[in-house]
Image (tube, rainbow, N blue to C red):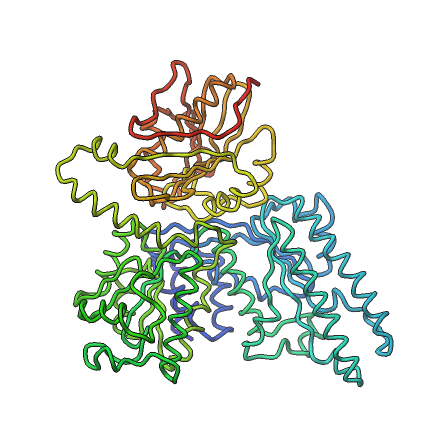
Length: 630
Protein backbone atom coordinates (compact mmCIF):
# COMPACT_ATOMS: atom_id res chain seq x y z
CA UNK A 1 0.00 0.00 0.00
CA UNK A 2 2.67 2.47 1.04
CA UNK A 3 4.69 1.82 -2.11
CA UNK A 4 1.79 2.59 -4.49
CA UNK A 5 0.85 5.73 -2.58
CA UNK A 6 4.46 6.87 -2.52
CA UNK A 7 4.59 6.44 -6.30
CA UNK A 8 1.47 8.59 -6.64
CA UNK A 9 2.89 11.28 -4.34
CA UNK A 10 6.21 11.33 -6.20
CA UNK A 11 4.33 12.33 -9.35
CA UNK A 12 3.55 15.67 -7.70
CA UNK A 13 7.25 16.52 -7.40
CA UNK A 14 8.96 19.12 -9.60
CA UNK A 15 10.98 16.51 -11.48
CA UNK A 16 8.38 13.76 -11.60
CA UNK A 17 9.05 10.94 -14.06
CA UNK A 18 6.05 9.34 -15.77
CA UNK A 19 4.79 6.11 -14.21
CA UNK A 20 2.67 4.44 -16.93
CA UNK A 21 2.37 1.15 -15.01
CA UNK A 22 0.78 2.78 -11.96
CA UNK A 23 -2.85 2.82 -13.10
CA UNK A 24 -2.91 -0.86 -14.02
CA UNK A 25 -1.57 -1.74 -10.58
CA UNK A 26 -4.13 0.48 -8.88
CA UNK A 27 -6.90 -1.06 -10.97
CA UNK A 28 -5.84 -4.55 -9.81
CA UNK A 29 -5.59 -3.56 -6.15
CA UNK A 30 -8.24 -4.91 -3.78
CA UNK A 31 -7.49 -2.23 -1.18
CA UNK A 32 -10.36 0.24 -1.58
CA UNK A 33 -8.86 2.73 0.89
CA UNK A 34 -5.61 2.79 -1.07
CA UNK A 35 -7.34 3.28 -4.42
CA UNK A 36 -9.56 6.03 -3.04
CA UNK A 37 -6.58 7.89 -1.56
CA UNK A 38 -4.64 7.51 -4.79
CA UNK A 39 -7.61 8.90 -6.73
CA UNK A 40 -7.64 12.00 -4.55
CA UNK A 41 -3.95 12.64 -5.24
CA UNK A 42 -4.38 12.01 -8.97
CA UNK A 43 -6.94 14.82 -9.18
CA UNK A 44 -4.12 17.37 -9.04
CA UNK A 45 -1.82 15.64 -11.55
CA UNK A 46 -1.42 15.78 -15.31
CA UNK A 47 -3.03 12.55 -16.62
CA UNK A 48 -0.18 12.13 -19.08
CA UNK A 49 2.12 11.23 -16.17
CA UNK A 50 0.25 7.94 -15.73
CA UNK A 51 -0.64 7.24 -19.36
CA UNK A 52 1.22 4.53 -21.34
CA UNK A 53 3.39 5.85 -24.17
CA UNK A 54 1.62 6.29 -27.48
CA UNK A 55 -1.74 7.01 -25.86
CA UNK A 56 -3.46 10.32 -25.23
CA UNK A 57 -6.13 10.40 -22.48
CA UNK A 58 -9.53 11.20 -23.90
CA UNK A 59 -11.32 14.05 -22.06
CA UNK A 60 -14.76 13.28 -20.64
CA UNK A 61 -17.06 15.57 -18.67
CA UNK A 62 -18.72 13.45 -15.99
CA UNK A 63 -21.58 14.63 -13.77
CA UNK A 64 -22.34 12.63 -10.63
CA UNK A 65 -25.92 13.22 -9.47
CA UNK A 66 -26.54 11.22 -6.26
CA UNK A 67 -29.35 10.95 -3.76
CA UNK A 68 -26.84 10.28 -0.96
CA UNK A 69 -23.32 11.32 0.02
CA UNK A 70 -21.12 10.07 -2.83
CA UNK A 71 -17.94 12.09 -2.33
CA UNK A 72 -15.90 8.88 -1.98
CA UNK A 73 -17.13 7.56 -5.32
CA UNK A 74 -15.36 10.30 -7.30
CA UNK A 75 -11.73 9.34 -6.53
CA UNK A 76 -12.55 5.69 -7.25
CA UNK A 77 -14.15 6.75 -10.53
CA UNK A 78 -11.09 8.83 -11.36
CA UNK A 79 -8.78 5.82 -11.02
CA UNK A 80 -11.10 3.63 -13.09
CA UNK A 81 -11.53 6.18 -15.86
CA UNK A 82 -7.84 7.05 -16.04
CA UNK A 83 -7.02 3.34 -16.25
CA UNK A 84 -9.49 3.13 -19.15
CA UNK A 85 -7.69 5.94 -21.01
CA UNK A 86 -10.04 8.75 -20.01
CA UNK A 87 -9.19 12.07 -18.34
CA UNK A 88 -12.36 13.03 -16.43
CA UNK A 89 -13.62 16.42 -15.35
CA UNK A 90 -16.20 16.00 -12.57
CA UNK A 91 -19.29 17.87 -11.46
CA UNK A 92 -20.97 16.69 -8.24
CA UNK A 93 -24.45 17.81 -7.24
CA UNK A 94 -25.64 17.93 -3.64
CA UNK A 95 -27.68 14.88 -2.57
CA UNK A 96 -30.77 16.94 -1.76
CA UNK A 97 -30.67 18.53 -5.23
CA UNK A 98 -30.92 15.38 -7.36
CA UNK A 99 -34.47 15.72 -8.68
CA UNK A 100 -34.17 19.48 -9.06
CA UNK A 101 -30.90 19.22 -10.99
CA UNK A 102 -32.32 16.59 -13.33
CA UNK A 103 -35.78 18.02 -13.75
CA UNK A 104 -35.20 21.77 -13.97
CA UNK A 105 -33.84 23.30 -17.21
CA UNK A 106 -31.04 25.81 -16.70
CA UNK A 107 -29.62 24.14 -13.60
CA UNK A 108 -25.85 24.11 -12.91
CA UNK A 109 -25.94 20.54 -14.21
CA UNK A 110 -27.15 21.83 -17.57
CA UNK A 111 -24.47 24.52 -17.53
CA UNK A 112 -21.78 21.87 -16.99
CA UNK A 113 -22.90 20.13 -20.24
CA UNK A 114 -21.75 16.64 -19.25
CA UNK A 115 -20.78 13.94 -21.71
CA UNK A 116 -21.85 11.38 -19.12
CA UNK A 117 -24.29 11.81 -16.24
CA UNK A 118 -24.27 9.19 -13.47
CA UNK A 119 -27.52 9.05 -11.48
CA UNK A 120 -26.92 7.34 -8.13
CA UNK A 121 -29.99 6.45 -6.09
CA UNK A 122 -30.76 4.61 -2.87
CA UNK A 123 -34.01 3.24 -1.51
CA UNK A 124 -35.10 6.44 0.26
CA UNK A 125 -35.79 8.01 -3.15
CA UNK A 126 -38.66 5.56 -3.62
CA UNK A 127 -39.79 4.46 -0.15
CA UNK A 128 -41.85 6.61 2.23
CA UNK A 129 -40.34 7.24 5.64
CA UNK A 130 -43.42 5.90 7.44
CA UNK A 131 -45.50 3.09 6.00
CA UNK A 132 -47.95 0.50 7.21
CA UNK A 133 -46.61 -3.07 6.84
CA UNK A 134 -50.19 -4.33 6.73
CA UNK A 135 -51.00 -2.13 3.71
CA UNK A 136 -48.82 -3.31 0.82
CA UNK A 137 -51.19 -1.75 -1.70
CA UNK A 138 -50.59 1.63 -0.11
CA UNK A 139 -46.83 1.03 -0.15
CA UNK A 140 -46.98 0.07 -3.84
CA UNK A 141 -48.88 3.27 -4.65
CA UNK A 142 -46.31 5.39 -2.79
CA UNK A 143 -43.39 3.68 -4.56
CA UNK A 144 -45.12 4.10 -7.92
CA UNK A 145 -45.67 7.82 -7.33
CA UNK A 146 -42.05 8.40 -6.26
CA UNK A 147 -40.72 6.32 -9.13
CA UNK A 148 -42.80 8.45 -11.49
CA UNK A 149 -41.17 11.62 -10.19
CA UNK A 150 -37.68 10.11 -10.51
CA UNK A 151 -38.13 8.74 -14.03
CA UNK A 152 -39.79 11.98 -15.17
CA UNK A 153 -36.80 13.98 -13.93
CA UNK A 154 -34.37 11.60 -15.65
CA UNK A 155 -36.37 11.71 -18.89
CA UNK A 156 -36.47 15.51 -18.72
CA UNK A 157 -32.70 15.74 -18.45
CA UNK A 158 -32.17 13.06 -21.10
CA UNK A 159 -34.19 15.21 -23.47
CA UNK A 160 -32.01 18.25 -22.77
CA UNK A 161 -28.51 16.77 -22.72
CA UNK A 162 -26.41 15.81 -25.73
CA UNK A 163 -24.54 13.30 -23.56
CA UNK A 164 -25.46 9.94 -22.09
CA UNK A 165 -27.22 9.19 -18.80
CA UNK A 166 -26.43 6.09 -16.75
CA UNK A 167 -28.94 4.77 -14.22
CA UNK A 168 -28.69 1.70 -12.03
CA UNK A 169 -31.09 -0.72 -10.42
CA UNK A 170 -31.49 0.06 -6.73
CA UNK A 171 -30.69 -2.58 -4.09
CA UNK A 172 -33.09 -2.93 -1.18
CA UNK A 173 -31.45 -3.39 2.26
CA UNK A 174 -32.52 -6.66 3.86
CA UNK A 175 -33.95 -4.85 6.91
CA UNK A 176 -36.85 -3.51 4.84
CA UNK A 177 -38.58 -6.81 4.00
CA UNK A 178 -37.68 -8.21 7.42
CA UNK A 179 -39.71 -5.43 9.00
CA UNK A 180 -42.71 -7.39 7.76
CA UNK A 181 -43.38 -10.54 9.77
CA UNK A 182 -45.46 -12.30 7.12
CA UNK A 183 -43.43 -14.36 4.67
CA UNK A 184 -46.15 -13.91 2.05
CA UNK A 185 -45.98 -10.13 2.45
CA UNK A 186 -42.18 -10.21 2.27
CA UNK A 187 -42.51 -11.89 -1.11
CA UNK A 188 -44.89 -9.11 -2.10
CA UNK A 189 -42.29 -6.49 -1.17
CA UNK A 190 -39.74 -8.39 -3.26
CA UNK A 191 -42.09 -8.34 -6.23
CA UNK A 192 -42.84 -4.64 -5.72
CA UNK A 193 -39.14 -3.79 -5.62
CA UNK A 194 -38.34 -5.81 -8.72
CA UNK A 195 -41.13 -4.03 -10.56
CA UNK A 196 -39.49 -0.74 -9.59
CA UNK A 197 -36.14 -1.88 -10.97
CA UNK A 198 -37.82 -3.20 -14.12
CA UNK A 199 -39.27 0.27 -14.56
CA UNK A 200 -35.77 1.77 -14.44
CA UNK A 201 -34.44 -0.82 -16.88
CA UNK A 202 -37.39 -0.17 -19.19
CA UNK A 203 -36.66 3.56 -19.18
CA UNK A 204 -33.11 2.77 -20.30
CA UNK A 205 -34.30 0.39 -23.02
CA UNK A 206 -36.71 2.85 -24.61
CA UNK A 207 -34.66 6.07 -24.27
CA UNK A 208 -31.79 6.48 -26.72
CA UNK A 209 -29.51 8.49 -24.43
CA UNK A 210 -30.17 6.46 -21.25
CA UNK A 211 -28.50 3.21 -20.18
CA UNK A 212 -28.61 1.25 -16.94
CA UNK A 213 -26.31 -0.89 -14.81
CA UNK A 214 -28.00 -3.82 -13.10
CA UNK A 215 -26.34 -3.06 -9.78
CA UNK A 216 -28.66 -5.39 -7.89
CA UNK A 217 -27.33 -8.35 -9.91
CA UNK A 218 -23.71 -7.23 -9.70
CA UNK A 219 -23.90 -7.09 -5.91
CA UNK A 220 -24.45 -10.86 -5.80
CA UNK A 221 -20.66 -11.29 -6.01
CA UNK A 222 -19.73 -8.34 -3.78
CA UNK A 223 -17.94 -9.51 -0.58
CA UNK A 224 -19.55 -6.79 1.52
CA UNK A 225 -22.80 -5.66 3.07
CA UNK A 226 -24.58 -2.94 1.15
CA UNK A 227 -23.53 -0.29 3.68
CA UNK A 228 -22.33 0.57 7.16
CA UNK A 229 -25.56 1.54 8.94
CA UNK A 230 -23.76 3.88 11.34
CA UNK A 231 -22.20 5.86 8.48
CA UNK A 232 -25.54 5.93 6.70
CA UNK A 233 -27.29 7.41 9.73
CA UNK A 234 -24.42 9.76 10.52
CA UNK A 235 -23.33 10.95 7.05
CA UNK A 236 -25.94 9.66 4.54
CA UNK A 237 -23.36 7.30 2.99
CA UNK A 238 -25.64 4.68 1.43
CA UNK A 239 -22.92 2.39 0.09
CA UNK A 240 -20.06 0.55 1.77
CA UNK A 241 -16.57 1.14 0.29
CA UNK A 242 -16.62 -2.18 -1.58
CA UNK A 243 -19.94 -1.25 -3.20
CA UNK A 244 -18.59 2.19 -4.13
CA UNK A 245 -15.61 0.48 -5.77
CA UNK A 246 -17.81 -1.99 -7.64
CA UNK A 247 -19.99 0.81 -8.96
CA UNK A 248 -16.96 2.92 -9.92
CA UNK A 249 -15.45 0.02 -11.88
CA UNK A 250 -18.69 -0.63 -13.76
CA UNK A 251 -19.27 3.07 -14.47
CA UNK A 252 -15.68 3.42 -15.69
CA UNK A 253 -16.29 0.48 -18.03
CA UNK A 254 -19.34 2.27 -19.37
CA UNK A 255 -17.24 5.41 -19.80
CA UNK A 256 -14.70 3.40 -21.78
CA UNK A 257 -17.46 2.15 -24.07
CA UNK A 258 -18.94 5.63 -24.41
CA UNK A 259 -15.54 7.05 -25.37
CA UNK A 260 -15.03 4.32 -27.97
CA UNK A 261 -12.09 2.79 -26.11
CA UNK A 262 -13.44 -0.74 -25.78
CA UNK A 263 -10.96 -3.45 -26.71
CA UNK A 264 -11.31 -5.23 -30.05
CA UNK A 265 -9.07 -8.30 -29.84
CA UNK A 266 -8.52 -11.02 -27.22
CA UNK A 267 -5.14 -12.71 -27.58
CA UNK A 268 -5.09 -16.07 -25.82
CA UNK A 269 -2.35 -18.29 -24.51
CA UNK A 270 -3.12 -22.01 -24.85
CA UNK A 271 -1.40 -24.19 -22.23
CA UNK A 272 -3.07 -23.81 -18.81
CA UNK A 273 -5.23 -21.01 -20.23
CA UNK A 274 -7.51 -22.51 -22.89
CA UNK A 275 -6.84 -26.04 -21.69
CA UNK A 276 -5.12 -27.67 -18.75
CA UNK A 277 -1.64 -29.07 -19.12
CA UNK A 278 1.18 -28.51 -21.58
CA UNK A 279 0.45 -29.69 -25.10
CA UNK A 280 4.05 -30.49 -25.98
CA UNK A 281 4.61 -32.56 -22.82
CA UNK A 282 1.21 -34.19 -22.34
CA UNK A 283 0.19 -34.69 -25.97
CA UNK A 284 -3.13 -33.77 -27.62
CA UNK A 285 -4.97 -36.72 -26.06
CA UNK A 286 -4.06 -35.80 -22.47
CA UNK A 287 -4.71 -32.07 -22.21
CA UNK A 288 -7.45 -31.23 -19.68
CA UNK A 289 -10.62 -30.14 -21.45
CA UNK A 290 -14.08 -31.67 -21.08
CA UNK A 291 -17.00 -32.20 -18.70
CA UNK A 292 -15.02 -32.98 -15.52
CA UNK A 293 -13.04 -30.55 -13.34
CA UNK A 294 -10.63 -28.95 -14.17
CA UNK A 295 -11.42 -29.57 -17.84
CA UNK A 296 -14.87 -28.02 -17.50
CA UNK A 297 -13.32 -24.82 -16.11
CA UNK A 298 -11.16 -24.49 -19.23
CA UNK A 299 -14.20 -25.30 -21.38
CA UNK A 300 -15.98 -22.38 -19.66
CA UNK A 301 -13.12 -20.08 -20.69
CA UNK A 302 -13.52 -21.26 -24.27
CA UNK A 303 -17.30 -20.77 -24.21
CA UNK A 304 -16.76 -17.26 -22.88
CA UNK A 305 -14.28 -16.49 -25.65
CA UNK A 306 -16.74 -17.88 -28.20
CA UNK A 307 -19.50 -15.66 -26.80
CA UNK A 308 -17.21 -12.65 -27.15
CA UNK A 309 -16.38 -13.62 -30.74
CA UNK A 310 -20.07 -13.79 -31.60
CA UNK A 311 -20.40 -10.19 -30.40
CA UNK A 312 -17.55 -8.85 -32.52
CA UNK A 313 -14.41 -9.47 -30.45
CA UNK A 314 -11.55 -10.83 -32.53
CA UNK A 315 -9.82 -13.93 -31.14
CA UNK A 316 -6.13 -14.65 -31.70
CA UNK A 317 -3.52 -17.01 -30.26
CA UNK A 318 -0.01 -16.23 -29.02
CA UNK A 319 1.46 -19.49 -27.74
CA UNK A 320 4.89 -21.03 -27.36
CA UNK A 321 4.02 -24.35 -28.93
CA UNK A 322 4.57 -26.63 -31.87
CA UNK A 323 2.39 -25.17 -34.65
CA UNK A 324 1.55 -28.60 -36.06
CA UNK A 325 0.29 -29.86 -32.72
CA UNK A 326 -1.77 -26.71 -32.21
CA UNK A 327 -3.42 -27.05 -35.62
CA UNK A 328 -4.14 -30.70 -34.85
CA UNK A 329 -5.81 -29.93 -31.52
CA UNK A 330 -7.84 -27.00 -32.91
CA UNK A 331 -9.01 -29.17 -35.77
CA UNK A 332 -9.56 -32.57 -34.17
CA UNK A 333 -9.95 -32.57 -30.38
CA UNK A 334 -13.55 -33.66 -29.70
CA UNK A 335 -13.96 -31.68 -26.45
CA UNK A 336 -12.71 -28.35 -27.76
CA UNK A 337 -15.28 -25.54 -27.90
CA UNK A 338 -13.17 -23.20 -30.04
CA UNK A 339 -12.03 -24.25 -33.50
CA UNK A 340 -9.46 -22.86 -35.90
CA UNK A 341 -12.07 -20.82 -37.77
CA UNK A 342 -12.93 -18.95 -34.57
CA UNK A 343 -9.50 -17.31 -34.61
CA UNK A 344 -8.45 -14.59 -37.02
CA UNK A 345 -4.78 -15.27 -36.31
CA UNK A 346 -2.84 -18.12 -34.67
CA UNK A 347 0.80 -17.53 -33.74
CA UNK A 348 2.06 -20.83 -32.35
CA UNK A 349 5.86 -20.75 -32.38
CA UNK A 350 8.83 -20.40 -30.06
CA UNK A 351 9.17 -16.63 -30.41
CA UNK A 352 8.76 -14.18 -27.54
CA UNK A 353 5.07 -13.47 -26.99
CA UNK A 354 5.41 -9.71 -27.17
CA UNK A 355 6.70 -10.18 -30.71
CA UNK A 356 3.77 -12.45 -31.57
CA UNK A 357 1.29 -9.91 -30.21
CA UNK A 358 2.91 -7.12 -32.20
CA UNK A 359 2.75 -9.29 -35.33
CA UNK A 360 -0.95 -9.98 -34.74
CA UNK A 361 -1.63 -6.24 -34.42
CA UNK A 362 0.23 -5.58 -37.68
CA UNK A 363 -1.54 -8.43 -39.42
CA UNK A 364 -4.99 -7.19 -38.40
CA UNK A 365 -4.08 -3.50 -38.74
CA UNK A 366 -5.34 -2.68 -35.24
CA UNK A 367 -3.69 -0.69 -32.46
CA UNK A 368 -1.91 -2.40 -29.60
CA UNK A 369 -4.15 -0.44 -27.26
CA UNK A 370 -7.17 -2.33 -28.61
CA UNK A 371 -5.81 -5.71 -27.45
CA UNK A 372 -6.21 -7.82 -24.30
CA UNK A 373 -3.74 -10.64 -23.56
CA UNK A 374 -4.77 -13.57 -21.33
CA UNK A 375 -2.01 -15.86 -20.03
CA UNK A 376 -1.37 -17.91 -16.90
CA UNK A 377 2.40 -17.30 -16.81
CA UNK A 378 3.63 -14.44 -14.58
CA UNK A 379 6.79 -14.27 -16.71
CA UNK A 380 4.89 -13.82 -19.98
CA UNK A 381 2.49 -11.32 -18.41
CA UNK A 382 5.32 -9.21 -17.01
CA UNK A 383 7.18 -9.39 -20.33
CA UNK A 384 4.20 -8.05 -22.29
CA UNK A 385 3.37 -5.41 -19.66
CA UNK A 386 6.94 -4.15 -19.80
CA UNK A 387 7.48 -4.14 -23.56
CA UNK A 388 3.93 -3.40 -24.76
CA UNK A 389 2.34 -1.16 -22.11
CA UNK A 390 -0.51 -0.33 -24.49
CA UNK A 391 -1.78 -3.93 -24.26
CA UNK A 392 -4.15 -4.81 -21.41
CA UNK A 393 -2.63 -7.86 -19.71
CA UNK A 394 -4.85 -10.20 -17.68
CA UNK A 395 -3.20 -13.00 -15.74
CA UNK A 396 -5.20 -16.23 -15.46
CA UNK A 397 -3.73 -17.10 -12.07
CA UNK A 398 -4.74 -19.74 -9.55
CA UNK A 399 -7.78 -21.98 -9.83
CA UNK A 400 -9.01 -22.23 -13.45
CA UNK A 401 -12.58 -22.04 -12.15
CA UNK A 402 -11.92 -18.31 -11.57
CA UNK A 403 -10.51 -17.57 -15.02
CA UNK A 404 -13.84 -16.49 -16.56
CA UNK A 405 -14.49 -13.96 -13.79
CA UNK A 406 -10.90 -12.75 -14.06
CA UNK A 407 -11.30 -12.10 -17.78
CA UNK A 408 -14.74 -10.49 -17.66
CA UNK A 409 -14.46 -8.39 -14.50
CA UNK A 410 -12.46 -5.67 -16.26
CA UNK A 411 -15.25 -4.94 -18.77
CA UNK A 412 -12.59 -4.53 -21.45
CA UNK A 413 -14.86 -5.43 -24.36
CA UNK A 414 -17.97 -3.51 -23.28
CA UNK A 415 -19.75 -1.51 -25.99
CA UNK A 416 -22.91 0.56 -25.89
CA UNK A 417 -24.67 -1.73 -28.36
CA UNK A 418 -23.90 -4.54 -30.80
CA UNK A 419 -24.73 -4.59 -34.50
CA UNK A 420 -24.99 -7.03 -37.40
CA UNK A 421 -21.42 -6.08 -38.35
CA UNK A 422 -20.17 -7.26 -34.95
CA UNK A 423 -21.49 -10.76 -35.55
CA UNK A 424 -19.61 -10.87 -38.88
CA UNK A 425 -16.36 -9.32 -37.69
CA UNK A 426 -14.29 -12.52 -37.60
CA UNK A 427 -15.30 -13.30 -41.19
CA UNK A 428 -14.48 -9.74 -42.24
CA UNK A 429 -11.00 -9.93 -40.80
CA UNK A 430 -10.44 -13.39 -42.22
CA UNK A 431 -11.28 -11.93 -45.64
CA UNK A 432 -8.67 -9.28 -44.92
CA UNK A 433 -6.06 -12.03 -44.53
CA UNK A 434 -7.15 -13.51 -47.88
CA UNK A 435 -6.95 -10.05 -49.39
CA UNK A 436 -3.41 -9.60 -48.11
CA UNK A 437 -2.36 -12.99 -49.47
CA UNK A 438 -3.84 -12.08 -52.85
CA UNK A 439 -1.94 -8.80 -52.71
CA UNK A 440 1.32 -10.64 -52.12
CA UNK A 441 0.63 -12.83 -55.14
CA UNK A 442 0.25 -9.75 -57.34
CA UNK A 443 4.01 -9.36 -57.25
CA UNK A 444 5.09 -6.33 -59.28
CA UNK A 445 1.62 -5.10 -60.23
CA UNK A 446 1.32 -1.31 -60.08
CA UNK A 447 -0.76 0.21 -57.26
CA UNK A 448 -3.39 1.28 -59.81
CA UNK A 449 -3.62 -2.22 -61.30
CA UNK A 450 -3.82 -3.74 -57.83
CA UNK A 451 -6.65 -1.43 -56.75
CA UNK A 452 -8.46 -1.91 -60.07
CA UNK A 453 -8.28 -5.66 -59.52
CA UNK A 454 -10.02 -5.40 -56.15
CA UNK A 455 -13.30 -4.41 -57.80
CA UNK A 456 -14.17 -1.88 -55.11
CA UNK A 457 -17.78 -0.73 -54.68
CA UNK A 458 -18.89 1.95 -52.19
CA UNK A 459 -22.52 2.53 -51.22
CA UNK A 460 -23.45 5.77 -49.41
CA UNK A 461 -26.70 6.04 -47.46
CA UNK A 462 -28.37 8.50 -45.14
CA UNK A 463 -28.48 7.07 -41.63
CA UNK A 464 -31.97 5.68 -41.07
CA UNK A 465 -33.33 3.63 -38.16
CA UNK A 466 -31.51 0.53 -39.41
CA UNK A 467 -28.18 2.19 -40.14
CA UNK A 468 -28.00 4.49 -37.09
CA UNK A 469 -26.84 1.85 -34.56
CA UNK A 470 -23.80 1.02 -36.69
CA UNK A 471 -23.04 4.71 -37.36
CA UNK A 472 -23.25 5.46 -33.63
CA UNK A 473 -20.95 2.54 -32.92
CA UNK A 474 -18.40 3.70 -35.51
CA UNK A 475 -18.50 7.20 -34.08
CA UNK A 476 -17.76 5.86 -30.63
CA UNK A 477 -15.14 3.22 -31.40
CA UNK A 478 -13.09 4.51 -34.34
CA UNK A 479 -9.82 6.10 -33.27
CA UNK A 480 -7.30 6.00 -36.14
CA UNK A 481 -9.27 7.50 -39.02
CA UNK A 482 -11.30 9.97 -36.98
CA UNK A 483 -10.90 13.58 -38.12
CA UNK A 484 -11.56 15.12 -34.71
CA UNK A 485 -10.90 12.19 -32.37
CA UNK A 486 -14.41 12.68 -31.01
CA UNK A 487 -16.81 9.99 -29.83
CA UNK A 488 -20.30 11.05 -30.89
CA UNK A 489 -23.12 10.88 -28.37
CA UNK A 490 -26.05 8.75 -29.49
CA UNK A 491 -28.62 11.43 -28.72
CA UNK A 492 -26.76 14.07 -30.73
CA UNK A 493 -26.29 11.73 -33.70
CA UNK A 494 -29.98 10.85 -33.72
CA UNK A 495 -30.91 14.54 -33.49
CA UNK A 496 -28.67 15.42 -36.44
CA UNK A 497 -30.00 12.52 -38.51
CA UNK A 498 -33.54 13.76 -38.01
CA UNK A 499 -32.92 17.48 -38.61
CA UNK A 500 -33.32 19.31 -41.89
CA UNK A 501 -30.03 21.21 -41.68
CA UNK A 502 -27.77 18.24 -40.93
CA UNK A 503 -26.91 14.99 -42.60
CA UNK A 504 -25.53 11.80 -41.06
CA UNK A 505 -24.16 9.34 -43.60
CA UNK A 506 -22.89 5.79 -43.47
CA UNK A 507 -20.98 4.04 -46.22
CA UNK A 508 -20.43 0.37 -46.98
CA UNK A 509 -17.69 -1.30 -49.02
CA UNK A 510 -17.45 -4.56 -50.92
CA UNK A 511 -14.78 -6.01 -53.19
CA UNK A 512 -13.89 -9.27 -54.91
CA UNK A 513 -13.47 -10.98 -51.55
CA UNK A 514 -16.87 -10.07 -50.16
CA UNK A 515 -18.85 -7.47 -48.27
CA UNK A 516 -16.97 -5.40 -45.69
CA UNK A 517 -20.23 -3.98 -44.34
CA UNK A 518 -20.68 -0.42 -43.12
CA UNK A 519 -17.16 0.85 -42.51
CA UNK A 520 -17.48 4.62 -42.13
CA UNK A 521 -19.68 7.59 -41.31
CA UNK A 522 -19.85 11.38 -41.69
CA UNK A 523 -21.59 14.07 -39.65
CA UNK A 524 -22.41 17.08 -41.85
CA UNK A 525 -23.96 20.49 -41.14
CA UNK A 526 -25.64 21.97 -44.23
CA UNK A 527 -25.78 25.73 -44.79
CA UNK A 528 -27.05 27.49 -47.94
CA UNK A 529 -23.59 28.45 -49.21
CA UNK A 530 -21.39 25.84 -47.54
CA UNK A 531 -21.43 22.41 -45.92
CA UNK A 532 -19.32 21.49 -42.88
CA UNK A 533 -17.98 17.98 -42.35
CA UNK A 534 -18.04 18.10 -38.57
CA UNK A 535 -16.41 14.69 -38.43
CA UNK A 536 -15.68 11.65 -40.54
CA UNK A 537 -14.63 8.20 -39.35
CA UNK A 538 -13.59 5.05 -41.20
CA UNK A 539 -12.62 1.57 -40.08
CA UNK A 540 -8.97 0.63 -40.33
CA UNK A 541 -10.11 -2.48 -42.24
CA UNK A 542 -10.34 -0.45 -45.46
CA UNK A 543 -7.34 1.87 -45.27
CA UNK A 544 -5.19 2.64 -48.31
CA UNK A 545 -7.81 2.07 -50.99
CA UNK A 546 -8.94 5.65 -51.65
CA UNK A 547 -12.40 5.03 -50.21
CA UNK A 548 -12.39 8.21 -48.13
CA UNK A 549 -11.75 10.27 -51.29
CA UNK A 550 -14.62 8.57 -53.13
CA UNK A 551 -17.00 9.38 -50.28
CA UNK A 552 -15.78 12.98 -50.03
CA UNK A 553 -16.28 13.37 -53.79
CA UNK A 554 -19.93 12.34 -53.36
CA UNK A 555 -20.36 14.81 -50.50
CA UNK A 556 -18.82 17.60 -52.59
CA UNK A 557 -21.11 16.75 -55.52
CA UNK A 558 -24.12 16.87 -53.19
CA UNK A 559 -23.05 20.23 -51.78
CA UNK A 560 -22.60 21.72 -55.27
CA UNK A 561 -26.00 20.40 -56.36
CA UNK A 562 -27.56 22.11 -53.31
CA UNK A 563 -25.96 25.45 -54.25
CA UNK A 564 -23.00 25.46 -51.85
CA UNK A 565 -19.73 27.02 -53.00
CA UNK A 566 -17.41 25.30 -50.55
CA UNK A 567 -17.05 22.37 -48.18
CA UNK A 568 -15.44 22.92 -44.79
CA UNK A 569 -14.07 20.23 -42.49
CA UNK A 570 -12.60 20.09 -39.00
CA UNK A 571 -9.46 18.29 -37.85
CA UNK A 572 -8.14 17.92 -34.32
CA UNK A 573 -5.08 15.88 -33.36
CA UNK A 574 -6.21 13.36 -30.73
CA UNK A 575 -2.85 11.64 -30.44
CA UNK A 576 -4.40 8.51 -31.95
CA UNK A 577 -5.72 9.70 -35.33
CA UNK A 578 -2.47 9.91 -37.28
CA UNK A 579 -3.92 8.08 -40.33
CA UNK A 580 -6.45 10.91 -40.75
CA UNK A 581 -3.94 13.74 -40.39
CA UNK A 582 -3.00 14.03 -44.10
CA UNK A 583 -6.42 13.35 -45.57
CA UNK A 584 -7.75 16.91 -45.81
CA UNK A 585 -4.54 18.29 -47.29
CA UNK A 586 -4.35 15.43 -49.80
CA UNK A 587 -7.96 16.17 -50.81
CA UNK A 588 -7.14 19.83 -51.55
CA UNK A 589 -8.39 21.47 -48.35
CA UNK A 590 -6.46 24.40 -46.91
CA UNK A 591 -6.47 25.54 -43.25
CA UNK A 592 -8.55 28.57 -42.34
CA UNK A 593 -7.48 30.87 -39.49
CA UNK A 594 -5.86 29.54 -36.32
CA UNK A 595 -6.83 26.45 -34.31
CA UNK A 596 -9.62 26.81 -31.74
CA UNK A 597 -8.91 26.54 -28.03
CA UNK A 598 -9.35 22.75 -28.12
CA UNK A 599 -6.95 22.42 -31.07
CA UNK A 600 -9.63 22.02 -33.75
CA UNK A 601 -8.54 23.50 -37.10
CA UNK A 602 -11.13 24.33 -39.78
CA UNK A 603 -10.18 23.53 -43.40
CA UNK A 604 -11.84 24.77 -46.62
CA UNK A 605 -12.30 23.18 -50.05
CA UNK A 606 -13.69 25.46 -52.84
CA UNK A 607 -16.21 23.75 -55.11
CA UNK A 608 -15.47 25.92 -58.16
CA UNK A 609 -13.94 24.54 -60.20
CA UNK A 610 -15.28 21.14 -59.21
CA UNK A 611 -12.53 19.24 -57.38
CA UNK A 612 -11.39 15.95 -58.94
CA UNK A 613 -11.50 13.60 -55.97
CA UNK A 614 -13.10 10.30 -56.98
CA UNK A 615 -10.58 7.48 -57.65
CA UNK A 616 -11.14 5.79 -61.00
CA UNK A 617 -10.95 2.28 -59.49
CA UNK A 618 -13.96 2.76 -57.19
CA UNK A 619 -17.60 2.43 -58.22
CA UNK A 620 -19.85 4.63 -56.06
CA UNK A 621 -23.56 4.16 -55.51
CA UNK A 622 -25.06 7.18 -53.77
CA UNK A 623 -28.44 6.29 -52.27
CA UNK A 624 -29.05 9.61 -50.52
CA UNK A 625 -32.10 11.71 -51.41
CA UNK A 626 -31.35 14.16 -54.22
CA UNK A 627 -30.35 17.51 -52.60
CA UNK A 628 -32.14 20.73 -53.43
CA UNK A 629 -30.77 24.24 -53.50
CA UNK A 630 -31.12 26.06 -50.17
